Length: 340
Length: 282
Image (cartoon, rainbow over all chains, first blue to last red; front, side, top):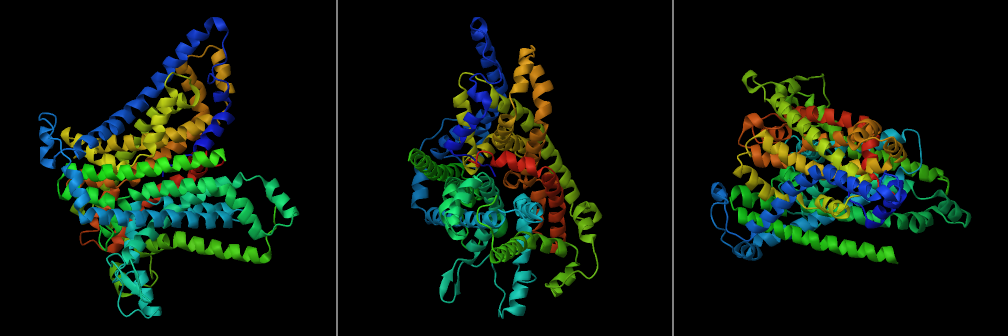
């Protein structure tokens, strides 16, 4: 839900906005005599306005992050909460050692990577097809565009309730249809089946259903971003290419797709990050059944079911470490393409 | 937009893609709406059938209080509404100020603060769930709607800052320059000059923040699962799914909590979308 933006785009916006170019916000360059007074006043106003935001970020993001590091490296359980701050911390590496030794951790990590990767690729692909199909104006395009956003706007609980009903083995429409028209002998438990053989190939059914659900919900956002980018492709390039005899496929391959590369890469990264830590979608659909135990569900289980704060914090820290590496890689990659 | 003219075949292809896309996006929603209007017994007997008569009793059953034989969704909706509106007010006040400073004012440390805010936004939220839960339960706030409100404000401030900043950057700075030349103070400038022209952006951001708070499920589950009186609408619907509640009632509840957000979103859709995708255009 929360899009970031590539550094190059940020720089360009900064350049495009007159305010930042003029060097002193909306405040016009003052005569030299008063300029230090004005700068000081603007400095004070800036801090005054931004301090509530910083207070929120500090109290509810930076402080908790410091704490999660402390928790990850100490033995602390839910029952210890009332004594927090009154007793010395017992430092230990035990949480990380246990995580690295546990089958559950590595299993969850693999499931999460698979889930996030497939979701990211799928929602980008669906978004791309939609954006290209709706690129040229036609009657009713505005309405179609708006309707395509419905899955994205829908509360996740409502969406999951609908999907669970749809896939229900007793009265769900998918099983009813399959048995009535496709000759299925027995109903398929889409949300509880770990693997099923389809023409001899083992398919992770429940995981794929969750991925499909996530693509359904998140592709509209990719569609929005790609549409915005497509609209700013200058028409002259395509006209020139058409004059040179480029056909539709060449136009797509050599003109449009290269223009979309940066935003596509960003969308892939963001969707991977969001899906990597997604809890709601998987928990609401399967509660982790059918081998869909993703990392976020593991964190929740360690915290709530096993009442082990230290272990939950360690799992969370390992997750952010992986995402951090990914983010650094992305920044390095986009720097390099910016330069070339 | 000229370039290569679409051939009739391309046009037919597009029509097919659009039809499939609409079916894919709206099919499940339409299915939910249809089922919520059918009696439960009929749904189990004939899953593929269409409603024979319009039956809205599932909506009433979902909303009514437990004492009247309902499932108490009405109360859950009120809880959600309170938390979501509180989140909107607090988050917007904080963000209008912060975003204006980030977009327009030059102050020492501006690059650093902007960087922190951007970093926070890409930060994996689930990692912070553990310490937030610990801190708030140490303060005795995990079994109250206040605790949830605090978490929601924190969750929405980064995205609201980002959207508001985009809106401010898109506004012309010349009006503000003129106001300052006329001797406006900072508070006069904000209230009389900036806010009136920023109204569409503020409203769009407020709606987006409202949607996030209204739809949120994870923290509601983490904090309030033991306190049925305090359940929010999403938590209520998800929890009732584990009880013996007819699926038609669950779907009616789901549709009922969906309709308001969908309507409000579409009223402000253009502004919300432009606030979100700015920066992706280049």
